[in-house]
Every structure is written in C-alpha cells, then in structure tokens.
Length: 512
Image 1: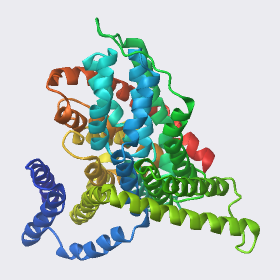
Image 2: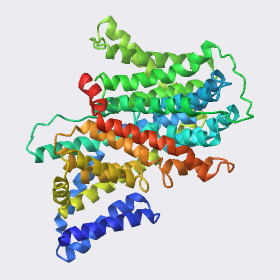
Image 3: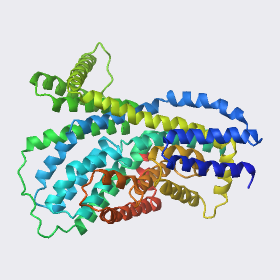
Image 4: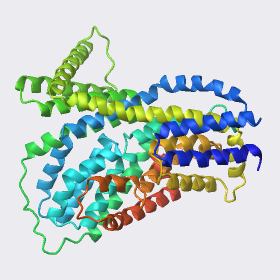
C-alpha cells in the first residue's frame, strides 16, 4: 500500500471513532478529513489546493433545487403527525378490525404503509406507532413479541415507499455519481437519473415488502391465550371516507404528479406541504366558515393537479378555463392563509416549523460535511484506488454491487441513512456505476438495504427508537426476537430484488 492509502485507512478509522464518540456527526465527517489533509500536506502527501474547491461545492449544495424538496417533505410529515391525523386513522382502523388480532395487526401494517408514504421520518413514525398502536394491538391479543417486531418493521417502511426523503437524497447522489462514472467510462451522453425514476423504481419493491409482511402475519400470528379482544364496532361510511380520503388524495396528488411527469420532486413536495397544512388546519378548527374555505382550497388544488395530469391543465388566461384556473389559484392562496393563521393560533405551526428546521439543518449539515470528505478522498486518489479494487474482484459486475451492499448493511449499525448515502455513494458508487448496472436498481437496493440494517439487532436504530418509548414490560430480548422474522423477510425481499432487477426497472421504463 502507498502512503496515501495508509493515510486514507487511518482517516476512516478516525472518522468512525469520531462519530461513535458522540460529537455531532457533521463535525466528525468534515473535521476529520480536513485535519487529515492538513497533517498529510505537512508530510508532502496531500495538495491543499484541493480544498479551494470546497466553497464551490457548498454553493452547489445550497443552489441545488432538488434538495429544496427535503424541508418541504419534512414539513409535510411533521404537520400530519402533530395534527393527530395519523392517530385518528389508526383509531378508525382499530374499530373496523376490532375482535380480530390478525385484523388489528394488518390494520397497523396498512396504516404504516400510508404513513410511510406521507412522512418518511423513521424515528418519529416508530415513536408514534408505539404510542398509538401498541396498546390496541396488545388489547386485541397480538403477542408482545410480534407487536414489537411489527411496529419496528412498519416504522421503517418510509425508507422504501415513495415519496421518501431517503429516495430524494439518493436521487441527488446517484444522479451525480452516475453521470461522472459514465463520463469516466467514455459515455459522454448517459441517460440522466432523476428522483422520479427512483420513486417509480421503489414502488413495486415497497409493495412487495408490505405484502411479505402481511403474508407472514396471516400465517404465523396466534392470539394470546385468555385475551379478550374488543368487539367489532360499526363505523359509518362517512367517517371512514372523511378520515382516509384526504391523506390518500394527498399521496395520489404528490406521487402521481411526479410519476406523470407534470411536476418535479421539489414542486410535488411543495404541493404536499400545502396539502398537509390544509388538512391539519381543517381538523384543528371548529369554525364552519374556516372549514369551508380550507376544504374548497384543498379540492381546488387537487382538481388542478388531476387536470394537469390528464393533460388538460394548460389554458390561456383570457379563456374560460384560464379564468377558472386563476380563480382556483386565488382560492388556494386564501385557504393556505386561513389555515396557516389557524395553526399559528394553535401553536401547531410554530412547533412544526421548528422541527422542520432542526431535521433539515441536520440533513444539510451532513451533506456539506460529506462534500469535504469526498474532496479529501479524491485528493488522496481514493477514487482511483476503489475503482481498481472493484475491478479486480471476481464475479463480474454483480460482485462490486454485493460488496457495496455489505458495506451499507454494516454501516447501518452505526450511521444514519443520510450519512451513509453521502459517504458510500460518492466514494464507492462510481466504481459500480461505471458498468452497465442500472442506477435505479442500484439505488433501490441501497434504500431497502438501509431499511434492513436499521432493524437488525443489537444496534439497529429502529430498535433504539422503540425501546425509548416502549413499556418496561416488553424486554429487550423480546424486541429482538420479534424483529428477527421481519429482518429475514427483508433479506428475502432484497434477494428477490437482486435476482429480478426488473422489479425496480420495469415501472420507470414504462413511465419515462
């Protein structure tokens, strides 16, 4: 090994030691490479001129319109969570499925899939599921072990089910890395990879995973002996529609506008944030006038999106259709103002904005810090070293993919998804994407792999989130035993996706 390679090895050991020490991850990810570069420059092994490119990289992050979708999707999820819309959905499901432990478990799974498509924030989702779903499941006779495993597994569905913040970040990194890798391989006009490609690619694998969970629950769930499930309660059809229709329409508008090609991920995220604000305001007010205005604004927004998806959204302003569209836009603006004022008076909007700033600040801090890491890595020639090592592996193009999957799985024990994406993809992804490997399939594999690693005992992040709010009567070993079948199901789904890449590539090819 050359001196530069030894320095790189020491740098990564120090990097993970810094992250595990408890200091903020972004400080470790940026600080360790910078200190390493300065020390190596004194020894004559690094050219500090490489660091002159860092301001340009930061500027590139700050002007990246795709990354604007992150705070908007975060705000969408936080509003839905804090307005207790999710809690109401589960309560209605519990009443519909009352009297059946399997029905209760399946309702939690179905509910989690909807919430995953609405929020995508794993920690918040798991904590919410523990608080509102664990007790009803135990009361229905679901064993504590299976209830614990189901909540942990369902809470991580936001990694793979679009629209997902993880897929947005992966789309940014995979798109840039794939372009660079293909140009280095001699292809100067590669097909660009967008977040819409990843959303479409993750849809079928996400449904597959939910289906595997459901089949396992149907096959293995046995009610606790002596448990007296609550009786099934008739729920009026109007209450079911009132509870589930708005979030389902919001998901349809957000995801559908992206897949139909009428909106970018950032534009769809803005639509999602507005829709979540209107729904939160609607359930927070009892004033009939406010409800009418907010409901009219929401229906106007949904109608405009559906017309645009149907190809009927373009009209000159001086035509009847154009005037109606202008009127609808004005109504939406009024509804948003009324809804925002209602949420502000109830202190919900302030709390949601603070949480959005906190989460978004963490994400962007790691993105900027990872730019410093990637810059120093290239300054030491690490990209050439990784490409040479990957090229020397036996087994063709699949072996480097499996190596990257192993690295992602192991890093999932100690790093957050954002950190893994912005460390692994730029440093190792280029060596994979120089080949004919589908970048969409590769990205979906990473997303599903991240979900698996977050569940695996003893260090899976989902387990820590669950343990932090679960009652003391559920032991740690019981949680581990409950989550293991779901880990095996995820590994099985990952193996199916490796064997059949068309599961991730078929829908993007059909749509785009």
